Length: 246
Image 1 (cartoon, rainbow, N blue to C red):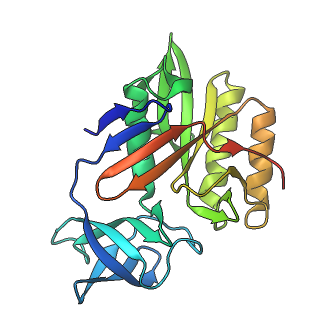
Image 2: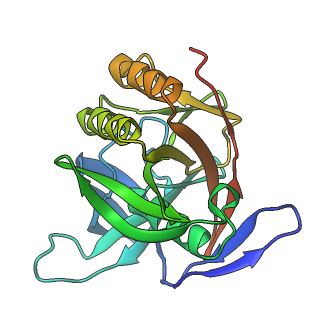
């Protein structure tokens, strides 16, 4: 369970309930595996992020790792965050869901203050949606998208073509057609974004689907998660602003 402290400026500070180890990033070996230097020793670390991460991973950048030893794993570490040019970036996409649930359950995620979490990873029409929420018997399907791609203060999603993301949008549109409520939450995992928008250049189909879904009633939400080493994350609700402007 993550502990939450509410701040005067409307943000929340979340204290992490797991220990982090520090190292330096050497290279990405494949989509989900990286080589890390910890005190001069090379180790393997699981990278829970399938994106291209072109504005995230740089040689010798500071890395924060969770230790998870298992005979079934190639690596005994999992990457949680990196820090480059004093900008901390959470690279674990699963953490966005974990903190979102915590904020909703503690009634601090303002748009969902009156909702409760019914279920996670909900199967609908052969697709999995992150959350099923409920308010006064009304169902709300919420998909969370983790955003780490930022250029000149503009956060964009996706940073690689996403068949899965397109499928999620089509599923949410079916939910809307069946008179349920539905939405997408874009979670910006770093502090240097002033706006978030679809990445038309990388996935035009996803971007157009998102606009179409929005015009049909899909709700779009944002939040910003700022990692504060060694063990805190600051959460800002409805920040940064979302825009469809190309």
